[in-house]
Structure formats: C-alpha cells, structure tokens
Amino acid sequence: MRRNFLFLAIIILAAISCGGNKTTSTTTVKASDLLCTVPSRSLAVMHFNNTGKALEILLDSTSVFRSIDYGELAESEMVLSYDYGAALIPLLAISTGKTSADTLEAVKQVLEQLPALKLKGYYYNDTLVKHSALLISPSQAAITEAESHIGAETSVLEAPDFEKAVALAKGSAGTVYLRNTSASRWVPKTLLQQFVPRKKLVNFVTNAAEWMVANFHSYKTEDIDIQTIAENQRYFMKVLESCSGADSHIKEVLPASTDWMVDLPLKDWKAYYDAYSLFLDTNSILTAHENALRSAKNKYGKNPLDWAKELNPKEIALVHWDGRQVLLLNVPKAKIPQSITENPHPGYTGLLFGGVFALEDESSCANLGSWLVVGAGEDVAEFALCEEKAEDVDLPSKDCKFAVYTPEALMFGKGSGIELNMY
Image 1 (cartoon, one colour):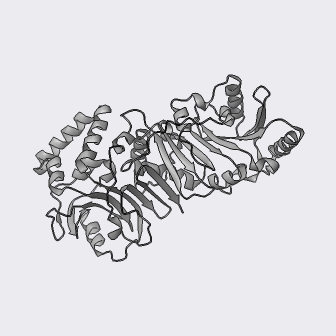
Image 2: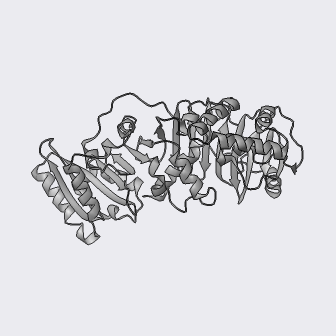
Image 3: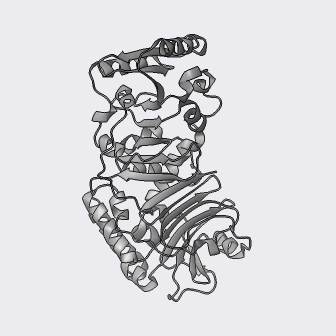
C-alpha cells in the first residue's frame, strides 16, 4: 500500500487517543457483489468505483498493479484487499459486469499481460447472479483461497460487524475498511517510530475500535471522513463518544517547525476522565490505574485527581518539533510557575488522560501565557523561545474534539464527524 495511505491508518490511531467519532448509522446500505470475492479474514478492504483512479491514490507508481493496461476495465468498480498471512498479500478484484463478447475480450487483454509481470489471474463468472469479476494477485495461493471462498459462498461480509461497517460507506468515490484487531499486521514497523513506540501504537489501534471506515468523496486525499465500529465498551472510541467539542487555542503557541502534534480540547476534563475510567474498568485494568494514582500521591504528595481539579485544564497537547517534545496544558485560571522550575508532578497528565500524553522526561515546567509547558529542561526552554508560529496550519478553533497534525496530514474531529486531509 502507498506510504501515505498507511500513514492515514496511523494518524487515525493518534486521533483516537484524543477525539470523537460519528454515531453508527442505522441506514441499510446494499453491499457490492464485488465484496463477495474478498476472503473473510482480510484485514484491509478498499472498495472504489473506478479502478484506474483508485490505484493512483492507493498505490505508488512502483506498484506492479499500476503497470497493467486495464483498457476498458480501467473505469470499472474494484476492490483491493489484503489477506492476513505471513506477509501482506494484495488481491485485486475488478468487476466485469455481465458477460459479453466485449467483456471477455477486455479480460483476455489484461490476462495476457500478467505472466510478464509475475502476476496470477482468475476470471470469476457467476451466471446465477449475472456477475463476473477478474481477480489478480502476485500470489497463486491468494487466488486459490479467493476461489475457495467464492465456491463456499463465504466472504468478508461474514466477518464480525463488517456489515455495520458497510452501512457507514458514504464515499462517492470509494471506501476503505481497516480491521483494527489485525493492526499488528498492517501497522508499518518503522512508521512514526521517532514519535511513538511501535508496541504502544499497535496496542492502541487494536483497542480503539473493531473497524475503521474511511470515506473518499473524490479521488483525492483531502476531505476524507472517518467513522468507526466500536460496539463494545472495551474499545476506546466509546470514551470519545462522551466528549463535547471545545475551543482550541493550540495554534497560538504551535511552532512553525512542528512535525507531530496531538491536541485535546476539553469542555469538561472530569467527564473525559470518567469515561476513560470506564474503559479501563471494562478492560480489567482500572485497579492497576488506581494503584498508579495512589503511588503517584505517595511519591509526589498530591492525588493526580486533585491536581487536575486545581488546574482545570481546558486543552492538552503533545508537540514534537526540531527533535524536541513538550506537553502543553491550557490552564487559564490556575497558578503556574513564571519561570522554568522543577516539575512537582511528573507523569500526572499521562495517568489521567492516556499514554499518548506521557513523556520519558517531565522533570521541568514553566508557563507561557496561560499554558503550562512540561518536559525536559532544555526542551521547555527552547519551546518558550520559539517565535515563528504555525500560522499556515488550518486548525479548527471552535467546537473541536481533537486535532492530529503532521506536515503530511491534518485530522480533526468537529461536531459529529472526523475529517482527514493528506497533503
């Protein structure tokens, strides 16, 4: 898959740690016949209306699928899926509609190109439902498995909650479905490693939701809306349903050289924490969390909940820039130190609001206007000296549930939706 597309998946993860999601739709959407060609254990399914245009945005120019001349089939409906195997094996299914002489000739022209590209093909023709499709993969095993699933009339449509995910397919160009429980397979090993440890990343994606649904309203990587399937309280998206939008002021202090930012505006920090505690309880880790709170109080002299009550944070952010990182807490009515000093309560932010807001070094703190800046002493000092701000970042300032930013992408929750723009 294209690097930027996989980046989409990871960016969703970061958003999940501090955002909201749309309410699951109850509208019935008829599943495409083409989805019946996708094996049930597939972990990523990309369904689009135009093969040629879709492959251009989903795959980079080195992909072997981009080397095929699809002829008349270039404008046909397609599904690109990835199976759960030892490696990510792609399977491309292109709808060839009702069988006709023209269709057979178009299929023949594509099949003739495959051997030179070391690809395997299979023409599937169901005369009963009057539907046919051309399947292509670099793996004969993937083709054989797809044939087996088709013959047994089993497909991804039987996967847990996938039909609910299909009901969220509102993209006029196409929709991408990602199975979060298989995150260890599709999360790249090196992506964002300078910001988030892979294990932490994978664990969070896995526990965020069962499926993530990305709707493309055009064949561009802008204005993509994200929805999720999280039917169980054990998924973190349930925490976010309790969040209300709030004002965001992070842009006022965000350095121009920011390369990673996660922002969480808070209308009511206690409501967020209560929902987070329920999530921890459902996953049988609330006791460990409460023990950590008691340990922090014993070590630093104050209960983290009392600390949060005194600060009453209106916004929390993690910012990476120029190889440095700090935590920011917008606490307009709290008394905070005017100069860099030792942080009396390290680790409290991550304990209460999630591991994404935890730094290895939180030894120092200082104020910048209404912001409490936390981190290593040199990082806190450098942040205070940053004069050039990220004025070009189009962050929402009102009714914002969360924002995740890198120079490659911006994702934010506002109102009842999530929007993604990849640059």
